[in-house]
Image (tube, one colour):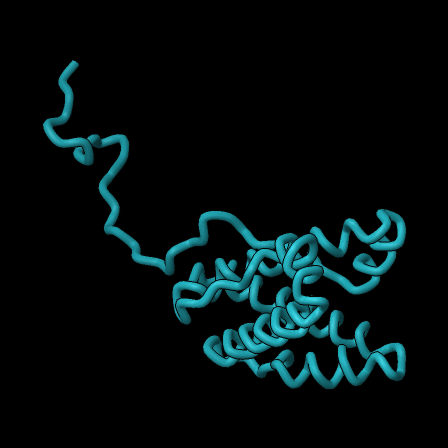
Length: 158
C-alpha cells in the first residue's frame, strides 16, 4: 500500500477548492425570548427567571457588540445584588439607559431599524410606569430587539 506524499492527494478524496464563507459563530445565541414566558416564568420562579434572562441578554449583547464599540455592559446579577442597593436605585437608571443605548447602536450598525434606544427606556419603562403597562412594553421591545440581534449574529457570525 502506498501513501500519498501530501495529505490532499488521496484519490478517494479529490481536492476541492477552498470556499470562503462568513465566519460562523462559536455557538448559536438564543432567539426565543418572549414577554409571555418572561412574565409567567417570572411569577412561577419568584423572579429568578427574569434575572437569568436579563443576565444572559446582557452577556449576549457583550458578545455581539463589544468588539465593535469597545464597551461592556455590567453583569446584571452584579447590578441586581450589589450595585443597585449601594446606589439606592440610581444604578438601575444608568444601567438600563446604557443597555438600551447599546442595543440601538448595534441595531444601527447592522443596518436594522433601531427599536430600542435610551429614549425607549425613559419613555416606556420610567414614564410608562405611570400607566402600568409601560415597563411591559419596554421589556417586550428589548426581548424582541435582542432576538433580532442574535438572529443576525447567528447568520453572519459577526
